[in-house]
Image (cartoon, rainbow, N blue to C red; front, side):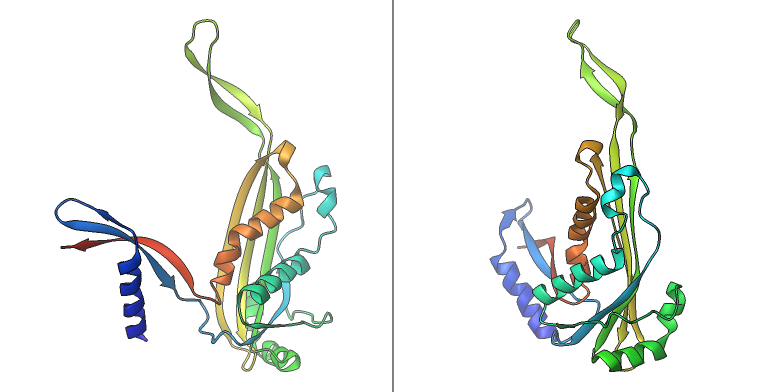
Amino acid sequence: MKRPAVFLAALVLLSAPARPLEAGSTEVKLKLPLRPKLAVSGRERISLAPFLVASKLSERKESARIKDLDLDLEFRRYLGKQIGRRTKMNVVTMPSDVKLPSTELKALGEASEFWRELGSRVGADILLSGIVDFQVEDKSGYKTEEYTSRLDGRTYYRQVFIEATGFSFEVTILAFDGRTGAKLFQETFKDQKEKSRRAADEMVGLFENLFSLENRLLGLFIVREREANRYVFK
């Protein structure tokens, strides 16, 4: 396993753009592979079980569009599509009548018998579950702004009221072995964004959060690349 990795690094090193430095050295940019969290072949059958929902969505009037949103279902639909599109794994449909054995994350991770039986029922090698949370918050407030006076041309500072909305999405993913029910790992992902109130659309905010987390979520199953600077000395 080590030889191909060394060869790959050497190949990237030779092909990467270089920038000469002082003292006879050269700076190069490498694309280093990041191992996935799960040791998978890429052909496994994976199924997404229900996720717990941590809190209710915002009750603001502007949130009328998402007051009836099923956050669990929306997240599973999104993640399932990404796994199916960007990996070779086979996404197995989860029966709609599946009920989680607990509303506590810790107990959920310890329910190995439930996950073993569910894995056998749906025919999945890997099962995913966990807890999701999406919050819409009012981030309006006074902020210091710099401006130049038209009278004397000098620069001053003033307090201005800025209307803004914050979107926060957090998910903790649990992965289980579908054959034994054992927990394989637990990982938490979080993204926050802030927009002016005029541009604040809750559904858009949710999917922008998900888009920002997409590569990190898929990094659980596939190899990713990370750029890093290295130095070659003559």
